[in-house]
Image (cartoon, one colour):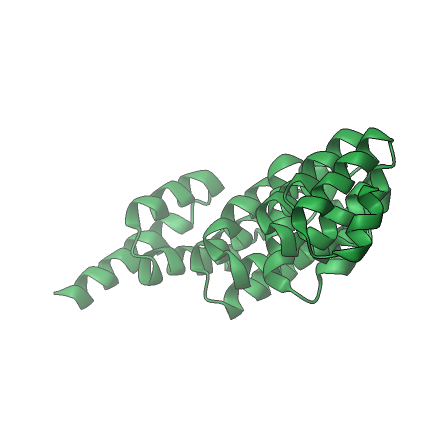
Length: 219
């Protein structure tokens, strides 16, 4: 009877909810799911998680985001075993902000889950969340540092440039990193710590010379 009335009054939300409840009581959860999608009802997320309906929504990821972006991205990030990161990436690639938010949420939970997409994530962080990029780089074990350095230079993310130069290593890179710390970031204390960390004896004269030059220009 409820189903018949819903056909006659398809936009009646009370009837739709009653029908969704009826289907749930009959364990016809995918029917309930479809009604929730049509209603854009937030209870859809609890239903998916409680009844493990990930297979039923894996190709409706953007539809979930339309209902509630935050809840959708948290749900997807918490269940990368059920819906793989690569699959979600394909569905979100037309919206780089959503893709960034999803991958950032996954990385916060489990860096291993983003092992295959970390180079792409550097670009996304630079575009959508530059304040988080240095932390990501420090946590990552799979980023191509030369490619990351190029991205950081392009976006003028100097603290990240310093990190990449330090990790790549070599006297030339260390001198450039020191130059950035003093001339661009104006962080002499950090420059001193940097020289101590890399243990380069020849960097001390460079540090003194660059700091002195900066002081002369500021007079």
